[in-house]
Image 1 (cartoon, rainbow, N blue to C red):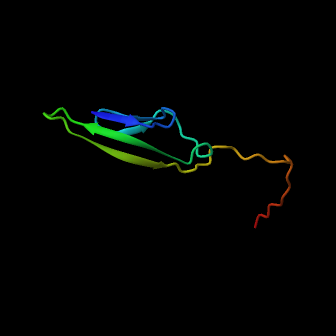
Image 2: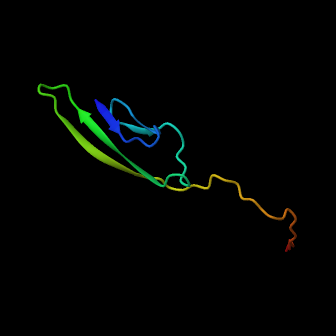
Length: 80
């Protein structure tokens, strides 16, 4: 069993196998990193548990189209 604390606005999910996924795209401009604490516990007698802090660094991708101040352009094409 996995439990998570300090989740970044509920954007990170952990399934029963401990696989970490995101529920929505993360935006580098809004959040460059996040961290959360995971508690893993078993059903033994006595039950045992352990915690880990997970640090996530978000990388930037080009997700916005470029904007140009002028729409006209000129150039030359040389064919040899």
